[in-house]
Amino acid sequence: MLPAEIFSESRLPPNEAMDAVEVAIARVLTKALRMSVSVTISENMRITAYPETGEPVILSLDDIDRKLRRHLLHQIELELQRRRTLNEADRLRELRGVTAPGLISRMTADGALFVALEIADCYRRLILAGICPERFQPLHERGRYILGSVKEFYITSVVPVMVDRKSTKVRILLNRTSKQLPRLLLQERSRISGIQCLKRIPGSSSIILTPKRIPKDVINSVGKELEEHLHVSILKTHR
Image 1 (tube, rainbow, N blue to C red):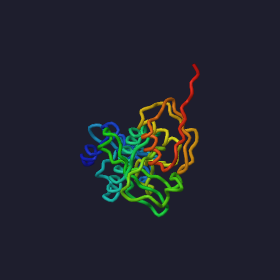
Image 2 (cartoon, one colour):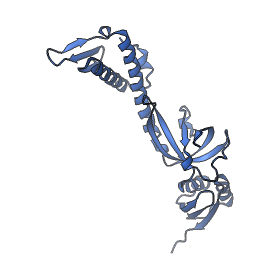
Image 3 (cartoon, rainbow, N blue to C red):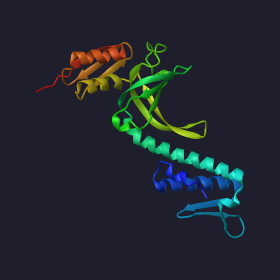
Image 4 (spheres, rainbow, N blue to C red):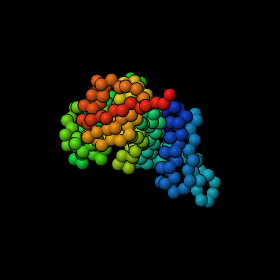
């Protein structure tokens, strides 16, 4: 029998947890036994092997040697983790295309930043870590970041990725060069919708078009955050 905590600690809906376990066991046994295997779990587990000749054979976990059982449990854990990652990615996908402040927690040899994101309260129970590759960092900022400092980032994508060809995790890709960053920061801080960024040269300037006047302190705060000049024009409307 499988340990009961596999299901109770899976953090998945019961039906999805059972499906993940069935898929993992069937996949491992099909490869190990070199024959098709089906697995169903309801009140009890039913493992059916289908040899090339003869009748189907009903197996139990007791028929499987200890080494293969350990491998089964490991593969079940990986499949449950994969399902959790996919579910988390679906929940977090709405973050794509927004900005978030993040604390720089690590810098790699190739210049990438690992960032601990500070997300709205509804995500406070999740540990959200993002990565900002060097190609998404303004030239004037590269090599100048300080561990523990907080910067604003544009969330480019939220995707599940494979780690070491085994485990999976959610990767949140961050960007400091997008022209969406000044536009969204101005909108968030001024609460004025419809702001556009027509052109941006990161670290130099951004050309901004707004339907109404943006307070100067907001423009200055965004310019300071990005270390660039914001050329702001008010969109003229014809009456």
